[in-house]
Length: 381
Image 1 (cartoon, rainbow, N blue to C red):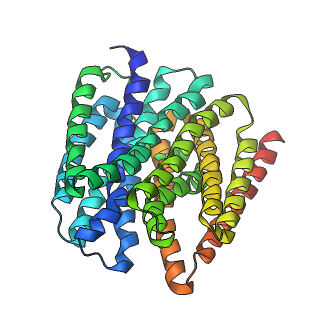
Image 2: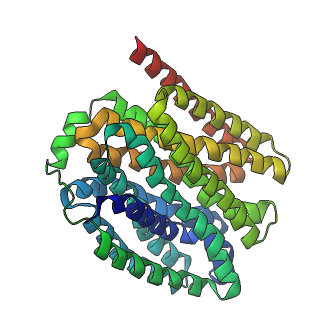
């Protein structure tokens, strides 16, 4: 099996998984016209796929070491066929939530590639390789752009069913091109986690990714409905604006990985968190759509660079325990995407404004900035 095929193959797998992961948030403006969803449950419907997409990253990262990426990707895509079909037939918001939970498998597969791909490349290229793999985040952009177009042309249920074809195609491609001979790591997961559990770097990286990837996921699921309800955009235009946000973050993530191979990673992260705090201020103060979008795209670039840098540091610090550490760090990143939509919705409900929620995000970014500065000083001393 051609080892060079694994990077484009697994990047394509991540694109497919992320396309499926955000079906609900991308089609919500259309779904809520057909399915009655209580206003206070809208944020929950878009957030639930993040739950399983977060907690499954730990076992999938471990299984990628134990069984190989080919087996884990194949199993994941087969499992995704069922919730996609279930959602396409849903008639109540409870059914949407039930199906949405299992869409999280599409987001959980992220930890598979970041565990598998470093086996094929020297350490000095891990940042770039994981950055290229992280370009698979583009899958969310494709869905936020294409799914509303399909729903407008036909129907949202047909748009969802089209993903069944995509998943079957991914299964076939992985059967043909997946590496069945990938090196395995068979150390029990409990033993690997015990080795790193008390290492503060694990939890600092988890905090960093909680903010950088969490902001990316949160705004991906939050923006389509927010732009239609708050700024009056139609579903297609809101999807295009969200797609630009995602494309920028996915593209810059490659740059972030490349820079991390050549520059001081912790220095890069201080700049990232300063930019995120500044972006939160812009969003809080923005009175009109152009300024709001400027703040969104500033956050997009910062998230992309930050995501690329974090996953350069993971194999640098924890090469022998990459599977579970990748899973833990990416799990916290996924959970970071679950809470902000709920916090922003609660802020709007309680105060009539999302400024308090944005202030909390900005404060957390500043905390991360301080931690990165302290880590940098300790590392250089």
